[in-house]
Image 1 (cartoon, each protein chain N blue to C red):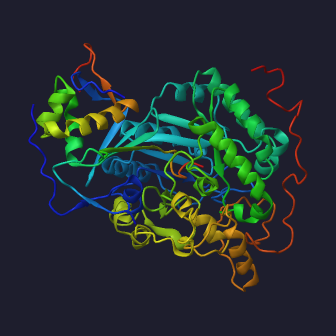
Image 2 (cartoon, rainbow over the protein chains, first blue to last red):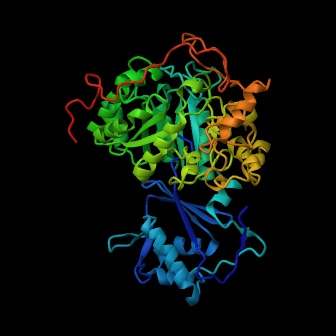
Image 3 (cartoon, rainbow over the protein chains, first blue to last red):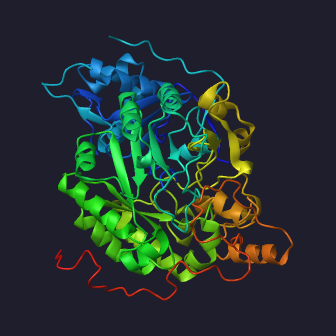
Length: 30
Length: 95
Length: 419
């Protein structure tokens, strides 16, 4: 399982604050 | 992508925002895109965009330091790119 | 107005990635499937909910509104309404309007039977209602063999009505089968013709699908063909996020490639039963009922089934496979109804591990699970109750067994159409 990151005040320049995805219901509409 | 921190922004009217323990989920009804804001501070920035004359002001008011601004600008750029946030025009009224 | 800076909680770690957050489960679904009724004017051979006859215990209008109130409180973004055929409920439009008025978006799935010009106009006028027309063949011959005589014409008529009402971007949804994969380009042309977006979804051995799985599920080479076609068409074509098991062919398909059952999505059925997913209507995946104290919110947050599903997934037998990260072991329902263990490969694993797993199942004396709920019409062809993946006798023919022609003439809606 991917590591968890602790919430910190200072951010590294690599850290992404936003992650996005297009979903289509995750098998919800058939 | 270059994001203009000095322009006025707001959350798109077709976006629904839902706070989560670790930040927030944003869902855009037009594009079907889901965005995940990964901490409370970026949520605070996004929520307050419409209340500030610029995105920079919204960031600073939410406690973002100068050193962190580039990371937040990148985050806002991603949200702008997927139409989650849009520039405010002269004719926009406060939500 | 200035905001005081938020002080982050000292000890709570944030998930690094969206997939981790989703695996662990959210406090509320992102969306969910809501089957409004088991009644249906059709008897599709592969129906995942074994629909046909209304259940006498179906939720009343007021009970449905109470569910919508809960979804609003939980901030569920939208509901995927289906059934059976949801539009045969007399309160269908009332419930759709109630949902959108209460900040819950609606997408509904229909065979088109009630989508006349008035209905199309009504839908075109609404921003928060999306409609999906079901069609499983690009020609009447292929379609009606699965969905019944006249169903092709009904669907086309509904699409024409939506197009005429200037409703652009409604969905044309197809369940991919051995019979219709050769027609994939024609489906795209039909969608384009009517201003619709094409949606291709995966057949599962669920509901009546278990009876026709052996004959209808895609052949291995067809899976490859389908994957290549999806990659070529990118985000232009939707998939219901149902083909993530194909990601093991190469680069991952767009979307969140994992099973959301009980974590970010679930099913509410017509009598208020809450299942992990619409393809898993079986008591093993029953989490509770909305009529219980605390309603849907309590079921979502506290059911032991959902808590089990939200435990971290270690990969099981798939752990050593290099493709596990992209396919996540495939579809839980597909494994369950073919008798495979849930912590092993998908029956259609594109690396071939599913085939060997199925061989062990059929050589053992274990009986594959059967759906416990069946609302099929009494006048349907009798179901042999053979289980998916078994080597029992042939299923009575209600489908075309010969390969359909790929260039029809008289029955094609494309006659006379130039791109």
